[in-house]
Length: 175
Ligand SMILES: [Zn+2]
Image 1 (cartoon, rainbow, N blue to C red):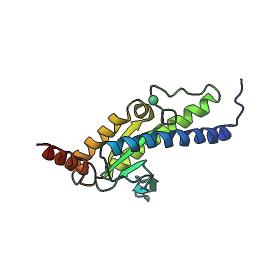
Image 2: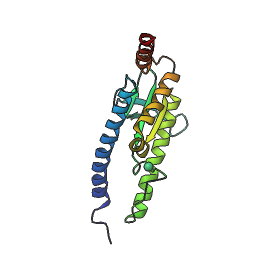
Image 3: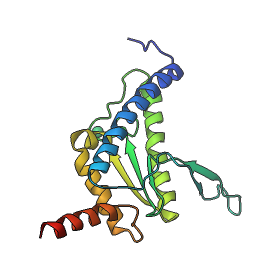
Image 4: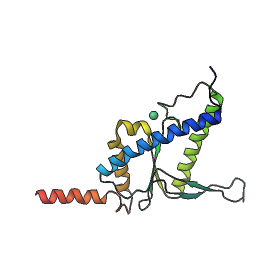
């Protein structure tokens, strides 16, 4: 059976699904982070990066990325990657219709993700990518990974320090 949508229309439909899914998984992560005492993130902040020049001695191309969560002070960014769009090895089933178009599209997405991670890392950011399925399965564990990453990063006072000090206070008052 032929796809009822043109590739462009299909893409728009899927983009709608993507943003809805992303919103709910991002919300789940926000709740879990709050519960874990993680603080200091901003959402979808633009980070400008310079890509390598396409040609020798050519200009470096600017690229703006908007990670889902940015911990500026700790220089940590977190992406929530949707299983379909980012090609999760467990859940990304490539549509049978327009197979070649989809293969190319999803491959390009994965390439772009790798490039984004590379550029951010080179610019001194620590990058954590969380799969949508990991978040739906255990948002608490994901928040725990973020908390550990923040506490492992120098200058993470805005991150988990508040939770730490709260715990310490509780401990002190109970003795
Ligand atoms: Zn998945």
